[in-house]
Image (tube, rainbow, N blue to C red; front, side, top):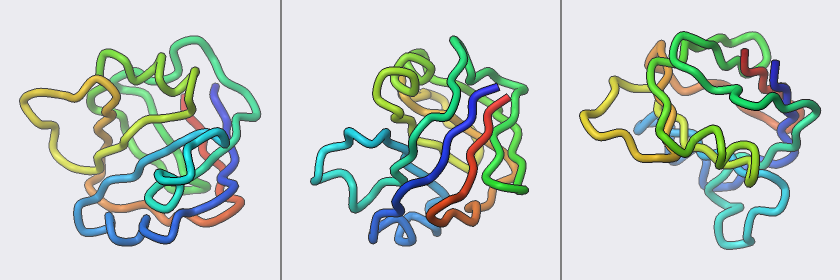
Length: 117
């Protein structure tokens, strides 16, 4: 199980609510990206946390992972970075993308616990 704590929610994060996209970045995210990202810090990270059929939780809200891009696990481990699309899977999945259902934007605030299993 991978567990992370939200440290900061960028001021532009709510603008992605209609598109149902959440951009996660670790604490080393560049200043220019922080305003559009959810900054989180790992408490525990496993080797390949993201897999289709797995779950990602934001506090008590649970989502099923439906697709994982080819570099998503590596990017998550190295940079704390993935883009999560809470929408139907596209034909071509970007390497750092993760798709999850149901198709709704999660409630995220400072202190939210993110769990991937």
